[in-house]
Length: 267
Image 1 (tube, helix red, strand yellow):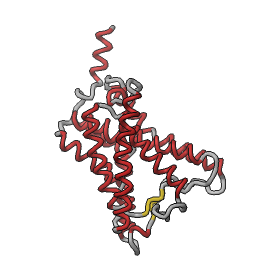
Image 2 (cartoon, helix red, strand yellow):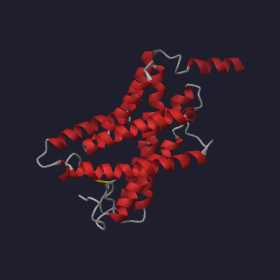
Image 3 (cartoon, rainbow, N blue to C red):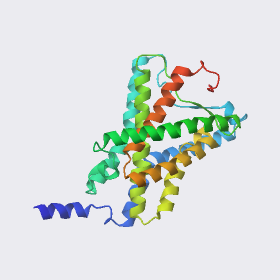
């Protein structure tokens, strides 16, 4: 029975599946997640650059109210949005489990090294977060970026928890799909390490293009760094932690500081 079980696992191994199947699977995962976001961001960017006025006079709204004036319905929509955005992560976990490599453990998203994941993630977040803020302020002042509004939720009790949940959802979706899963599949398809790195970083940049040129360039650089760190550590856990911390500081910090400090642009 053990030999038969092993043969079944091998039959679903990603390395043994025909390249045509791997390509179609990868395209479907991206079409259901960040590939679709990239197309949406590109269309949004075209709309922004063809609209009268400069980019910095326009706003890219994140974490907006889904039902203004109806807080409980709004909360339901917020939780629904977070949950459905994580479906591609569950799909990737299923595909990797079917492959016989232990699900998300194969890309280093597990509880084996929580201290390392959090510690390394915090260090990466501190380095990238501060640099990213300075870069955003500079490119916006130069007219190459929209004004990013991280949140415009009503001032209700669930505001901060929802912002934190949104940050964690973003980090899980992006790092699992664009780093762990995509690099694995591109490697199985015979892509060179350099080509796979450019594809991952390029995709990350394009689905942030709705923010402007700064969003594109800044996130491509972040994507290169994250791919290199993933290859060094063999884990997406620290990247998920870093990304979550960066977004939590951005979302919650904006909620607390917007309109109260002069250096933080608001719409």
